[in-house]
Structures are given as structure tokens and as C-alpha cells.
Image (cartoon, rainbow, N blue to C red):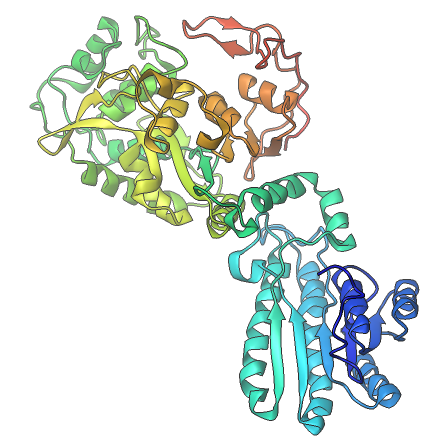
Length: 581
């Protein structure tokens, strides 16, 4: 009820002490309690705002630094001396400064400052209010915690979240301890409220504001009915730094886990005769088909495999793949890396990925490993910011999926690290025969099982999301669906993600890896819902030249390049790189 004249006057003769009373939740509470007949003591460090609040509600102003024990003690003495009792203590003062961010970047001084104001102050207020309430045999303490104490923050504010968790736990402890004396202790856990504190925070970080707004509007805690909102994330370089397929292949080559095929040409429909001959020469024919190749010792074999995978060329510079394919649905090299694991069971491939995971998480950031004579990234890290975001989205009722251009059994080894099970992982799905992976690949939409003509890549990611999450079948799965059958949120980092990230209806998060079409759409921001962020670890520097959006930013299905176009057909102008490391 917002009409403050329609009140019951339930607090006549009672005294309420409110910290942070000069604005926001504190001021609104002072108005309400005054309208219910309470004597209100408005405590605030801001003399102008505090006095204005006290004058408005006909109360008493006390200037107080809530981190100072003597000042807090004097606050409650003033309340008692003025009105004869302390019946309600609303411990509401708090801060959320911009330098309180990820645990990796928040300094110790910022951590301590937030803890003092948000947690120690509540301890002091409870400590000095309780003796008055004990003598009276009654009282009510309300401490302002936050929803982040329960579910975490969408974008990290580590000390704030920890402080509010402490307030919540302390309130439970005090509630149990003092209930027998007639004193109630409760904690409020509000979500974002349109206060000056929040406005200041969001003014300094508009992307955080936009992301939080999307969660508030689309999450089930907002009371929205119907199906749960969906959030979709790419994996490599979106949720983790570096590539889990590369890490697994490197581990497999160093541990002799790639099996000799019957014929290299049979591994991939686009593999050239030159590539077949190069692989046969380097890897030899002495190992029977289906047995492990000695790639840990045979450097030539390992190098040939990596040259073809990484450069699509043999070690002598000859083309490794030829033919035609839809460049918005597949990449032969992406198919081939999954086909190299043919002959293993899916569970075995997942076990290899787990071992690579342990090795790469243990290695320091910046580590390189030597595989054959190739230098490859030797470490992987979960982005803590994305882990926080996924946890927050799940707590807000979102159904969160990973949609990756890596083999699905590999991503399944990593997904539990962000709280997602195997049923929420969509990756490249190789066909299984007699329990073992083959070189065949599952199709999508109206494209049946194939040799890799359709992957979870670019337009293929849209198809797989429509088919697996929304149950859209046939050719229609390739089309953008109505708003009720599209993710509310999507995040990615490269061209492979551009279609499904663009389909999101609430927010599109782009991690900048200098990928042309993706960044053209992100910077153009035609629907005002794109959020751009540098990579969280070792971010790319600013790209000097503009992205060629108006000429060659778009990859057509036949592989030729053209201009990036908006939904209305207009051409996106070239974009300068603006958000980077």
C-alpha cells in the first residue's frame, strides 16, 4: 500500500532508530514508521540529508559514523534519553564502492572498508541496541542484508557480497540467542532498489546495470510466469580462457591416445590426397589400425597432425582440405579434431579431457607447452566473472546451457566447474557405433547424420539451440524463432557465436577477441542490448584498424566475404575498436 495516510498507527509511543536514514531504503522506512506513529531517530553520516529526513518525519537527527563504537553507543543513548525507549533498530547503512569488484582485482583496503561499513557497523548497532531491549523485555532488530548473500552477484562485488552474507548469518545467530527475551532479529534481503547508492554504482558501470536489469526483468524472482528463461554460453574463451579441445588434443598426443585410422583419407570427407600422403608418411603404417600411435615419441607425426589442424595445411604448405561446405555451418578442421578421437568411447574421451583439465588448471597463467615442436597454450582458467554470472542466472530461475564448437564429451568434463550437468551441454556430437565414437557427426534440423556438414558453429548453433532446447524440428530449426522460443541471454567471443548470441532477446554479451563480424554487430548495437567486455584474462589490445563491417566483415555460406547487414537490410558501417585490454 503506497498511500501513507491509510495506516494503522501501530507504532505509537515506540522509538525506531534508523541508520542510513538520509536516503533510499532508510528514508522510505523513516517515512513509513513515522506514519505508523513511531518516534524516529534518523542516523546518517551525511548531515544535510540526515537533518532533512528528520525534519520531514518530525524526528531527531544524530550524525554518526557507524564504524565508530563510541558514536554508535551515543546514538542509542540519545534515542533512549530523548524518547525513553529503544524499540526498533533498523541497521541499514551500507556502501557499494566501484573498487569492490572481483576478488582478483579488489584491494585489501577496499575489502576492509566495505566490511567495516556493511558488517562491523551492524555488529556495533546490535551490540549497543540490545541492552536497552533486554531491559524492556522486548524489541525488534532489522538488519539490511541483500539477495546477493543468498545467490551471489551478477557481476562480482566480492566484499559487498561477503559482508551481506555475514549480516545474514549474524542475524540468524542473534535471532536464536535473544528470542527467549522477547527480542526479534531479522534480516532483509532486497534485490536491486532504485536508490542513490545503486544509481551511482550503475552510472559508473552501465553494463552491470543493463545486465542486472535483464536478470530482474526476465528472471523468475521477478514473478514472471511461463517457461523458465534460457541463457546460453559459448565455452572456449567465453566461460574459460583458452581452448579445451586444444588442451585435450595436446594431452592425447603427449600420451599416445590417438588411434591409427584405417586410412587418413577416411577420417574426413574434405581431407586432400596431399594431406593423406603427408600423414601416412609422418605417422607410418607399422601400427595396426585401431592401436595407439606413438605420438609422444614420433615428433613428425605429431607435427603433421597439428599443422593440418591449426593451419589447414600440410607441413610442406599444401592445402589439407578441399571441396565445398557451408561456411556458416561447419569448418573441416573443427570436424577433424573430433574425428581424431574415433575408436574411443565417449566416456574415455571425457576421462582424457578431465586429465587435461587437471593439468591445465594447475599450470600458471601464461604457461606454454611443447607438443611435437609446436608451442601451444599450457593453461586454462575458468573466468570467475562468468562463474558468478552463471550461478546468479541459475539462482534467478534461468535454465543455463553451454553451446560449444568442441566435442561434447570434452566439454562435459569441464561443465561441472560452473555448476552445469551433462544435460545442459550441447557440443559436436559424433555418431557412436558399438559404444565407440566414429568419424560420423549428428545432423541438425533437416540435415541428417553426416560427415560434419553441420556443427555447433555459427548458424549451426542456432539450429542446435532451437532443436535441443525448444524442440523445433526440421528446416524450421535453422530460422530465428519468435521471442518466446529464443534465449533471453547469450554470451560468446567469436564468429562461431554470432548467430545465437544475436538471437538473444534480453542481452548479448560479447567478449572482445577482435573477430570481425562478431564485433561489428556488437559495436553497431542495433537493438541497444549488446554488452562488450574485454577478455577477463590476458585481454587483447585495441585493434588499430577499423573492423571492415561495410565491405568484408560478413562470411557468406560459400566462403566469400561481404558487408555485415542489419535485420532491415541496411549495411553496418565500419566500427572502431573501443572496448579492449
